[in-house]
Image (tube, rainbow, N blue to C red; front, side, top):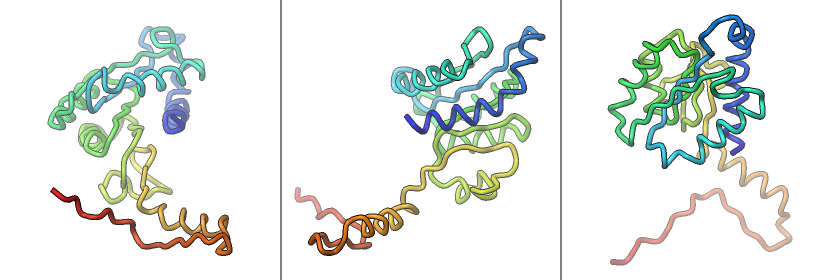
Length: 179
């Protein structure tokens, strides 16, 4: 759920300028939430997302609107949903997963895109670099493979060799399954 908090922080920074405008104009700042699967499958994630927005003072229907769209596990729907968000002129798009972010990127170069989870945004061609993503896209990367050697290195420092633990940087491979 820490991931949700970081996405909310990025959204807050993106939407902050709209808070004053929202008081003057009838249109609320709007988040386009692109869910990769179904409403029920993402229920907990959405509850955390909306809960954190509330903690930061964003109340759905009062000072912010959220347009939810669900791809129902069909990646071919990402382009259609992203185009719908562009047509609706949402203020920020929040997609989840590499394919959804790529579709949003193809749909707009103007609307900010804050992604919740992408494995390798640089390798996927979504951003220029992690330090300076560039364009209208930012978000959180979950590059677990890149962090594994560093985690083992830190574990070696914390657990001295005298404890009898033997740590290796070799990947762990599961034995083949017997049928």
